[in-house]
Image 1 (cartoon, rainbow, N blue to C red):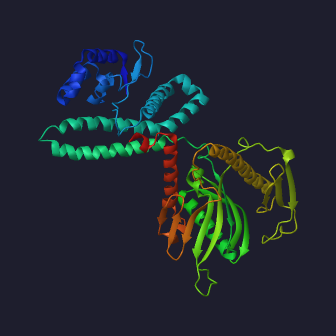
Image 2: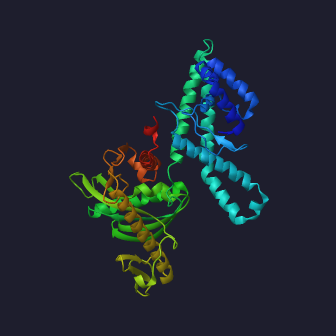
Image 3: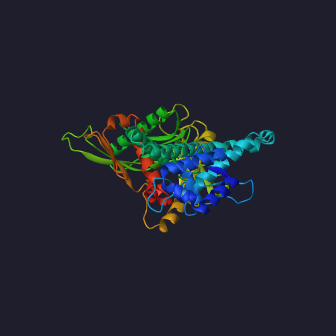
Length: 448
């Protein structure tokens, strides 16, 4: 909340005489005092009597310099014990963002900014990023004011029952808004807006592993369709019998990486193969890698570090197979990373696709180096879906999927394989977001 500096001086004057402190001990008297101040300073009327606590130094902090005519930001009352509200640091950040939002909105109306396409575009992007947080923060403050007003009604015997029901609903709204605000405050992953390179490979289990890899590829393909994303197959190696040794695809759409980034890891299947006469359950695995698509500006590759080989395509494909050198194999010499591509009849197109995959893999290596360096300094390692972890089990006999990282189980395996994995994906996102909140030191546990 922003209030005028003259109001701050008036409140401090009242606090100095002790009148306001006595008023605060009596709810009815405090409300009367508040209404009197609100008439003199209309800006206070929207925030309810609880803000009067802000005159006490142990409850309030000044956000800007005290020059005449300036505005200052006050924190809501924060007791020395537990609080249902955000921490002081969190409230400071929210107040700063709200002030920044108002400033940008005012600048957007300036003809000079409108005439500057670069500045206008930058302002628009910033506003779009912080608007959801500001809207939730304002809704949260409105609910706090309503709670303060309802607390007064609780003192009226005739209104107590109605006020209690109202208070229960308002407290639920407050807690929901605060939880949403905390999620919005999680630092944004710079890769969240990127498209992804999806790589699926058969693991241990022979033909059954290849069949499971094909099931996973179909699952993510159908999920992409449900999300309205575009999926393009870059490369696929069949194993025969309907299975695949490996498949690589690019998925393009809105915030694809933000939804799929926790899918990376070892997926395990438990089922009875069609060729198993005794009905014995087999366990097989397949690996899934979700790589953010790297642009040329994200990762620089020196031409001298590449060895590019061409060869004839193999497999079904018509006249171009085994007759033209359209297939491409690119080796990144410093890391010995090899990418092959033969999906297109054109060598140029195959080379372009191979470079996309190579950039994504090298970008992932760089990110992994950073993650490993951070992990060494942490007391505990937080699971992030590394490929060495068995992240999920798909048990066909029980129609069950279990995510071992988060302890989440669902019994809709058949529909999940058909792409209905929204609940599964969202559960992982919620879990890791919660961990990020706790790691940031401003999670729910630290405030309550």
